[in-house]
Length: 405
Length: 235
Image (tube, rainbow over all chains, first blue to last red; front, side, top):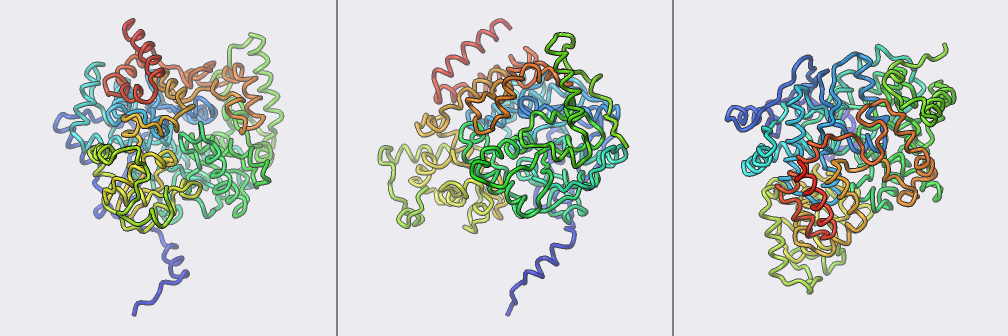
């Protein structure tokens, strides 16, 4: 008679790194299918030019991550509501003099709207993606996707394009009207994968000691749940049983990463809900995420890698105070944490003032005198109001802050 | 979603929507089933409930991704009509449900159900999207889902005094961002070329997207087509 598995046996089994063997992966390799379509002349396959690093994805296949010459596919939520997220990503590039392109020939992926309202269709969504990829191809730069939803949405659309000739034909008909080819990049790359690839170099230039900080990680659903096999996993991080991005960066920067039981849960964003039905969003973000983090890990910070997650987890905390819920955990993206560690100005670059949950105790724990930098930033704003300065530029923001001691 | 025992007996769903004929309900289901993505999203169902355990909406609504996969697999036309009229807008579209051991994608099925619902002008979907039309207008016309000027205290009172503070300082804060593509902009998230927007409008017309908008909200359709056609004519 077979004996029941004990909890101890399960924990022992989970303590070993998962070995992923690409030769027995349960899914097809999208790279092969793209090469076949390229050989048939059906698509233009954009290849990475210049340096890249390879990392294993969920089933052991290798994924190339470009280091520079990247076309920054911006995120609506970053640029509209969390601009320090986007500016931190570019600031990190600038610190290493890495060539990049910040295009204006780019639209939203429109995925947020699609997941919120379904007021589109497969052809429209695939055409939007293909137009953006063709625009990147025209510049010679390789797409680096800032938004987790764009990343997941594009991975799924790539699968649909590969599997459905009718869809390819429909999209090509639309692109023909613009004089654009049907371009698919050889990899669809999320910026947090670039951050993961760069983490050692960030640590070499780290100016702010982060060893006093305990942080929890919220892995973004659309990064690793949509087309699950195309996300980076590392045996060194949670035994390869969770995606490695974000956590690996924090560990490299000396942050104490604390676990909590609801790490797999979504943030509560809901796409439609966060805009017009936020009772769900607030309840989920606070009850399933923030309060659980506090009860189990009591973090100084929670870190994630997507637009909606930062917004939801940060902005949902205020109203919960009325119900005496446990809240008060500031929320940042991995790029903002990396930039802060390397001395990015808290307001000119990281733009803390766009975040609503109190971030001051976190900066104080890092020994960053935020009031001094806030006063400096207020000086910038005074000049802008007076018309003596048109705005903050990279010239104002590039130089890292110098901390006493 | 019905959770009483009378409505949970598989294959014997009560007709809870007599206002629609069985033929109409069947037509909607076949429209879903004929979507090219359907066969990639549904392989059957073990009824293991793993999708439900991961689903955020299942915790806060009477909602079950398992029932959706089950109803689809059984081609239970009555229950699918219940789902399309009562449940689909509760899904958070996080795709936590895709940890399904049968590789089902209940979230993807919901996406198709929503599309079919909109295409057929179902009132329940129009009701669910009331108040959302301004976002559709923004994303289709400007190429951005959100913009800073949407953050108004009236719309986001639950975000606390930060929204008030932001609203008072928006114009100067937007100028204090180092990225050239963002700096100073309040009605869009980033600067987009005119040519790029014209190409986006072409996509909306050529993909059949505008037909969906027409079913959803005729006045929104009129507004969008007027502006986009005028821009496209100017070239």
